[in-house]
Length: 390
View 1 (cartoon, one colour):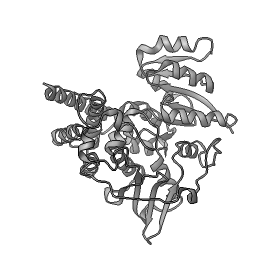
View 2 (cartoon, helix red, strand yellow):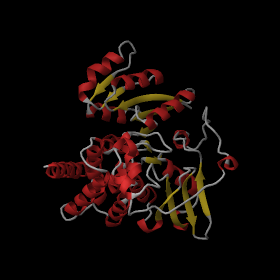
View 3 (spheres, one colour):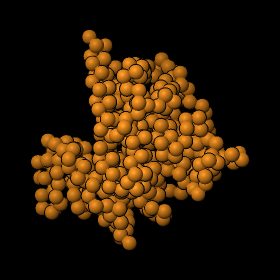
View 4 (cartoon, helix red, strand yellow):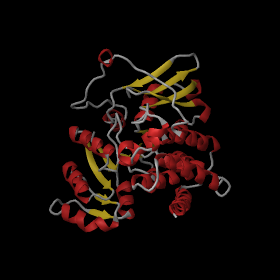
């Protein structure tokens, strides 16, 4: 049986890994649509390589470049948000949602509302509008498969077990490039240094979220929605080897762990297989004897306050995760641009959470409301940055 797959975020790191697996298993898949952000040449290249049925670029000004790059291929294309929605809603058995940031909310929601099976790598969908997304998934009969490495490992570790028998779900963090650095050294670090992830090759924004440990905070919120587990049963530990991706502790004290080498193709293959196991060419088996030792430590929330802020947002609920994510995206962009320092990211995010606690107390009722809150917080955060600069 041939499955039709659409890939949103096809030019990012997860999209490229997905394309590699689809190419390896051409007999099992056809590609219905691909969508990218601003790089028309890269998107056209992926569309041609996979024989996609449609290509969409989020940047509305990139339409002419995309058409030129696809000339002679016979692949129809479009540009702008509506084109990305079209890519998300084309007929498909599986939609890979790998658009980074809040930009992924609308297309992912569109796929869910059609009852699609969605392999979710856009954690912001659940951080910003988790209640609405999970409610829509139930209402429209959509199936959400976790594609992030930690959540996929949790799903595999749980297997056929009952969530009620789970006392703790733990995700791991590599610790990022500053795991052993002093607070003074971290405070002086450039964005380039913060983005030098020791284990994973990801985009600039995600790498910096990993350096601040905000990424782990986002993933705790994502796990809360995916598995319907309250904050008290969720935890995070630092594991520099990035071999153990998640652990599930059962009521009898037993622990089931998900282990594999840090290769995103493993969780992607698990999702693409829909229960079947796909082989991975050039993949390496895990050799624990060669690895030698696996170490774990508690995260230091004094040096990495973004994790503390995210935990607080999860505990507070309502719109706090939505606010936190929007402020973080603005703050990280400012840090990359050299306008603020490393610890200013946490300061701006915490200020935003405090400012909007009373203004937006309730969880967004739908994606549209989540995006409206997101826009308010982005304006507030941008104005705050300007005031600081002044």
